[in-house]
Amino acid sequence: KQVIAVVPAAGIGSRMGAERPKQYLQLNEQCILGHTLDCLLTHPQISTVIVALNPSDEYFAQLPQASNAKLVTVIGGGERADSVLAALKLADEHSWVLVHDAARPCLSHHDIDKLIASDSMFPQGAILGSPVRDTMKRTEVNGEISDTVCREQLWHALTPQYFPVRELKNNLSAALVEGALITDEASAMQWAGIKPGIVRGRADNIKVTHPDDLQLASLFLDNLNR
Ligand code: CTP
Ligand code: MG
Image (tube, rainbow, N blue to C red):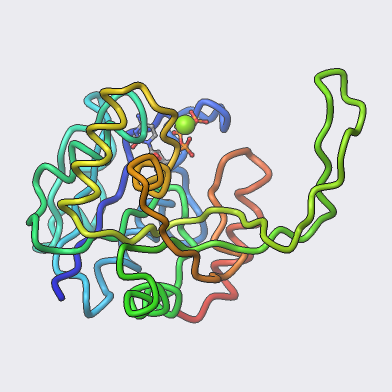
């Protein structure tokens, strides 16, 4: 099976509020996107990595990974899903794709292997997830608790998310045309009536979102043995 990766990296990191988009902030020995790309580019099964960039990106070209022969860039769109779709348009329709957030630098080869190997159990695709740990509450709009939600079957949806290119591209574009709320690739597949699987991944594969996450990611990266 031919496997490629798509990396949405066109966001501006408004919640981080830094002087540059968060994927270009330094984390230990290189920037966040550098770590993310290294993990994908060195995985033996991934043949191509397509990165979606902001039209006004001024940092990507300076990365050491920018000249890697496996790497292709494309201009992303207004929402994450638009960026992923733009990248998928360059992908071979017969391959499978791992869609992975630029802002998740703590990915491990082990989790990629687990996800790719899950295709016998989940032939229509699957995503990495981690079980929620806290007791979960539902509230009314005023903040009063209305329910305790059973935690047994609740997961955090992580990335990579692993699907056949053709199906993902078709479902993503149809869902976007219909105006469905699409926050990850699994939502687009679910929208089309497909039930992707969840594969348990490491909880330290966090999305760097707020300033506090930088210290956590730095620690997690040091502990990672890819
Ligand atoms: N992303 C993208 N295209 C967009 C928006 C987001 O490629 N139009 C990417 C981001 O670069 C990031 C991933 O999608 O790697 C996850 O998005 P998020 O964490 O929300 O990043 P930002 O949108 O940059 O951050 P914020 O929402 O705080 O502005
Ligand atoms: Mg965002």
